[in-house]
Amino acid sequence: MQPQAVAILLLAVSAMVSPHPVIGVKRGRCEEKDKERVLTACKHFIMVGHPKESPHNHSPCCKAVQAVPGHDMQCIVDLLTEKERNEHEQASIIALQEACDD
Image (cartoon, rainbow, N blue to C red; front, side, top):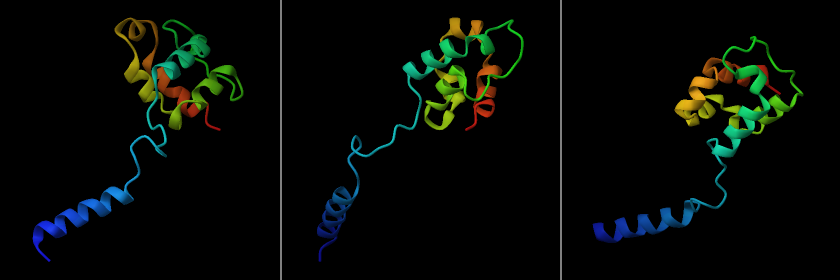
């Protein structure tokens, strides 16, 4: 078999085996709506100047955190605008991941 034919055959086989990028792919990163939900539900725990306390595991805040893929609070921090960074404690947002473990 010629090298070009082998390459085409391998390409065809890998295309048939690989899943379509849209079908069956689990959402891996958080989205803007996840960020808004966490910032709203956890406002008391993450605003600059608020006392440092942890939410109860069954609180609306923890439910919002648990709805984020992988409970990835670093992803939420990465989505913050400059204004939101000035209003919210990034370390407190990240701490929500551990505080709200299932």
